[in-house]
Image (cartoon, one colour):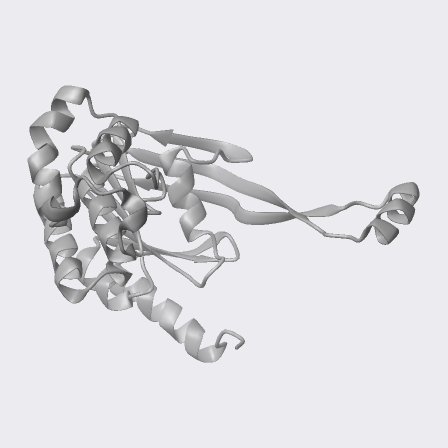
Length: 249
């Protein structure tokens, strides 16, 4: 059996929620020794592994810990407890264009962002035309990205990420943004990655997409894995839970 490319072993992630107080409230509370923050666990004792070339979908309500898992895999944040092993070059499609500098042009941001993803200058130069063509931004490539629309931002961010030759692709609701033609283009590119044996971890609220695209699914609730297995079975359990206890409005 091939060695897993992603392994989570009893992983927890704790954040601190800070309470804002007025100056009048702050001093007496400080003298009483009261805490100004409390812990919040985004993940609690999460364990799973992903095999090479596998596509795993993660479903769950907002705030269940889905994006936190992707950020830990990407190295954006570290676990509070447990161990995480990641083998291979990771390309995160988490917050597309978040690393772009607004005053720099699309061309300049391609070189900066691609280098952050581990590409050499030679690789970037060789793939530059493909990156711009995929994003359909030749007309605007020398324009500062602060003048880009949100759709242009997303297209450029996606194109840089998918041309970085990843071993592991992390996808967080990318197909929920952009126009229909771009969404279809994204999906076609991801299917190409599947055929090439790239490992994909996909977070999506679209249960249909998870069923059609993924080999396996995880359902997260309250930072814990409550179900894992075949996508059709996991998404059915999750859908049934939503019908029993709808989110508050």
